[in-house]
Image 1 (cartoon, rainbow, N blue to C red):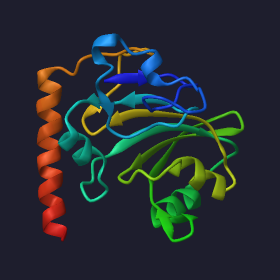
Image 2 (tube, helix red, strand yellow; image 1 turned 45 degrees about the vertical axis):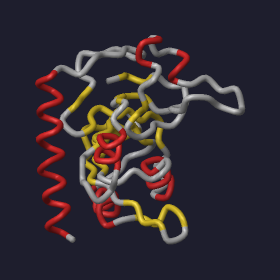
Image 3 (cartoon, helix red, strand yellow; image 1 turned 90 degrees about the vertical axis):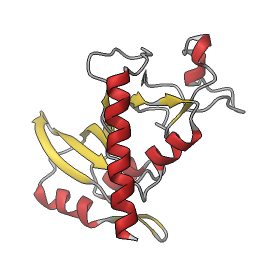
Length: 183
């Protein structure tokens, strides 16, 4: 697991010369790929692996693995905004984005949210909050499935412990079974 700092893109190389997470990762893990992405300005958890099947299961929208974010948005949001996020917002033509959101607290004039996604559309949270008139100030992924960044610092890479991996694989198995039943 890797705690991505802001200012880096989640790709192996960039034709525009932007800094990537691979500029920071230790050499022995540069062969690993992230399960999902975080945009340049976002921080937080990336699960890094060389297992393509695991990446697919962690990121495919039919297998509903939760990704939880701590988001600071401009202005005072309310319960009606939370309902709109859950009901879905068209962020692009024919692309509806959904999010489970909860107001954690108000910081001055801004709102701190906990947002859970089960789909991973490009810049989904930013586009949804822009639509609602509450642009993102900061966005941090705090967990993906059962894996979290608790106790980690920005830029830190840690190997997932066997117990953590077992918990994640159990969650994936349950989510896959659920996805099969919903077909």
